Amino acid sequence: MSGLEIERKFLVHKRDDEYKRQAYSSSRIKQGYICSGHGRTVRVRIRDEKGYLTIKGPSVDGGLSRYEFEKEITLDEAEHLMQLCEPGIIDKTRFLVKSGRHTFEVDEFYGDNEGLVMAEVELQSEDEAFEKPGFIAKEVTGDARFYNSYLRQMPFVLWRNQLPEEFR
Image (cartoon, one colour):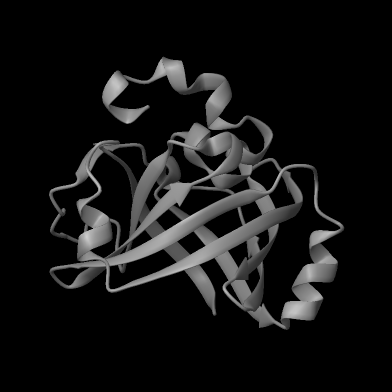
């Protein structure tokens, strides 16, 4: 899969785990970055028992869209490529929640990013309307602190106190 990725990103109220009850699917994800800089990333991901290699370009439109190329690779290839990654692994569970015509991907983070819960929705166009589920809170689209590549380098544990209590 490749093309332009258009998505909006939100924080989830920390005490609201309604997304878990509404989820129709969940999977464990571990990912590392072979390189990340200047808004460009090369990511290796293991999602359950499958591997993926993803290349993302820099964000445009205030972080709303960016080029993305993703290719499924074998689990063995992904495990070997993880050895080449920069220090710091992102570890999270992703919950898929339907809301209207869209699916929200809700990520609950572990390790040094423990306590952070974010939701993303992919759109076909930048002005596409969508229904927000009740657990969605503050929009953080375009805020680089909430990019996985940033969280790898500057984990949530180091700056969580900058956020209001309801998101820590």
